[in-house]
Image 1: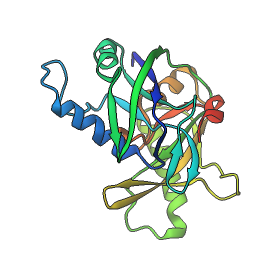
Image 2: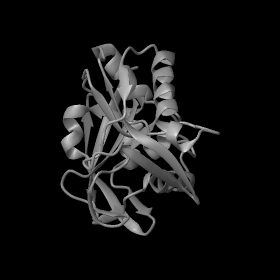
Image 3: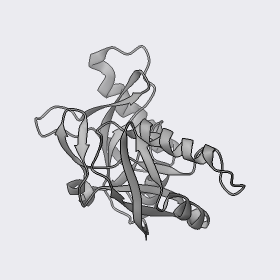
Image 4: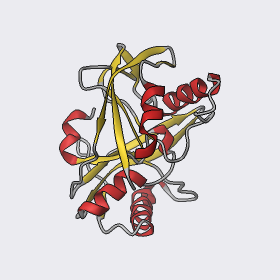
Length: 218
């Protein structure tokens, strides 16, 4: 579980608010266009991407600001490979252009409380009212599978509703929720930041970060 995080500042103005799948698709396309024996044609499972925060300026569009960064986590021994690949790369995200600049390498920091903007699980044949309950059971099952001791819950949005989220994948919308996990040891905190929870992690889902970073998320 030796991993590092790379953060890239961005040159660009706007992005789709729901850009997790589009970002992954742009990265995959770039990999496929390269003729390099060192890089795969798709992101490996042990490369984790986070969606990019920004300020909602109109329905479906966020404006990038000084705190907007692309973040990825990778095994420590692969850091130079992915550092070079992403540095100065230009991605077209549904017509919104961004360039990745000024990379910096971050050592993950343990925290007893971690948050994720969006976690998704495959929940089939469940009535609408029962979704939060089954979702939280899936979270606890996921934590137990990773041998992580912690308590997961769904926080509230500013308007008092459960923090319900969706992810657009082609013509399909996937339901999920924001999640906070409390009571983590240092070891379990780093383990959760590495493994995440749920599926669709190449699209930014299941990315956990210390709660003190909440002020940087939009």
